[in-house]
Image 1 (cartoon, rainbow, N blue to C red):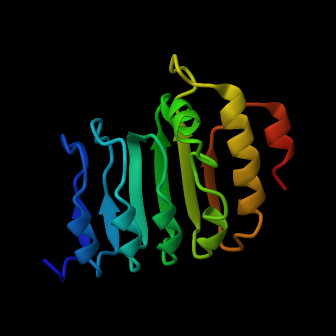
Image 2: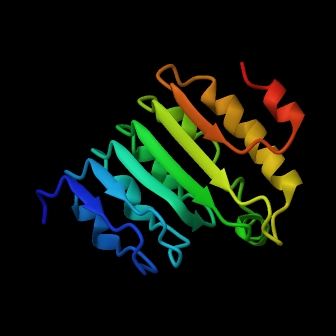
Image 3: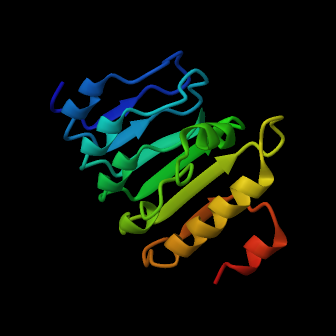
Length: 162
């Protein structure tokens, strides 16, 4: 299906995406909303360079792969993270749940939603607070961003918005 422009796998029992997802190079819209079993994206996701809308709302990922930085055509990006994301970060010694210097490269973004479940038993507010500070620093360079949905864990984070 190399000519596919839109793919909606929302609310399915998808556990993983195959590396061959990268063959859908003309994909403009990819929806994976509410896929409760999907927790990771393959690194090849970055090869979908024409992608303009990537909706993962309600699909609680552990982290974003660094390949996201290649999605330079993204205009709308919605992502959700699970409570275990902080523990994954610690166990893999990752820089961040969202790799550093990724969001700032998505210069076409006009809508960004980053959702977390702060009530999850495993959620560490301090780790997320550090992530939010880095996210806000990166977002300051996005000139086209008009809509931002972001869980802010503290008043100090809110003060960083300008």
